[in-house]
Length: 464
Image 1 (cartoon, rainbow, N blue to C red):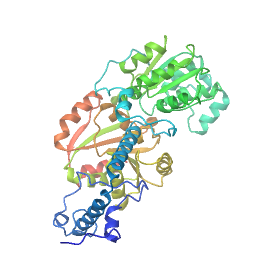
Image 2: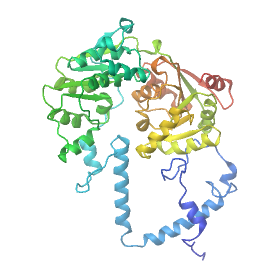
Image 3: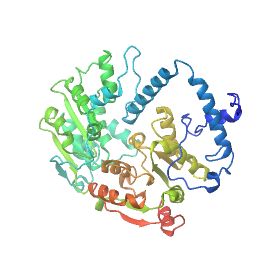
Image 4: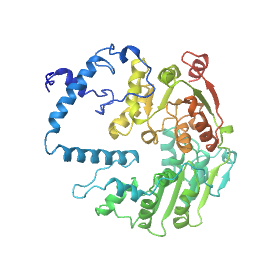
């Protein structure tokens, strides 16, 4: 009978504690389904410690032996159940952008109660758009921020940030925001919505509190936040909050503000999902959307490459052969590994996902902004707030499941009138579903079947 492996066996420690050192997350890496097939590794002849090798199998057996010994403890079952529940609750909060510190005296919500509080997630359907005043960008030609009513200090501060003249959504809404009207504004990602509500609020000299619905409600329940004196409330990304099931929490928060306070709702899309908020809180609002914000008038090109899943990683690498900054979207469990692969291939890359601390995510983003890295491999939740004006290419290594996710990803490039490129990689069997998704997003993209080394991939890379 073989002797069980000792817990002090160095091979066991190496196999049981493999982590991604590049992000510092401590999360064990996963093997993606599109990793190239390695026949030597399959026969156990790969390099020591790699997946499929004989030594890795020995390490795994050693780890299992240690696990069996540890599991003999009578408290192990309860401990594992507690750990699993805690990990699952953390994932739920991370995936909805609700990472927050909770007071120790409050019992954490269960998964079921948290989902019930948020409500069911709405299917990926195109809903009826709210009627809006369509603004012609040409009507604002030659205007300055001063012409809109902003003071010279604000104008000078905007100029220091490179904003010398207002974008159409800013020119349309800033006067109404300054006048205290309720405003409902739609502008595509990168159109300048943040300045549209932020600059006039700063001009009014108010104290500003920024928070997620969950955190705001926590502070209210703790008695640390009082909304009775609020003069203006902004709901940014209103439709996305509703999609995530936060309609009722937002309603509860808004009901705590004075009935005569100003309400501002801004989003990349405005449809009937936010109709409940508009009907209850925005009486006779000024509703604006910008004419011509379609693919025909956009500076972003959309391409779809149909590839063998085994070649996907190599194609991503070839698409990033240019000098421009890149944003690569993938599933959470693949982000670290793909970033490591690109970095090993000579393309400076970092991961950006919900398992990283906010400080680490910001540091990685700053490195892309400053040019110290060329690419970020990101997930949807972590990348939603990315604001980098000179991203040359967005590569979707994993295609999104919802058309709005596609629009938000695509909006990371081609900002402020710059030229952009969005390349989506899919397998042949995913083509029908992606065609349907693009139709909902009102995007026309050319489909091409490629393999590593094809001329088309080099041509797309050279455009960056």
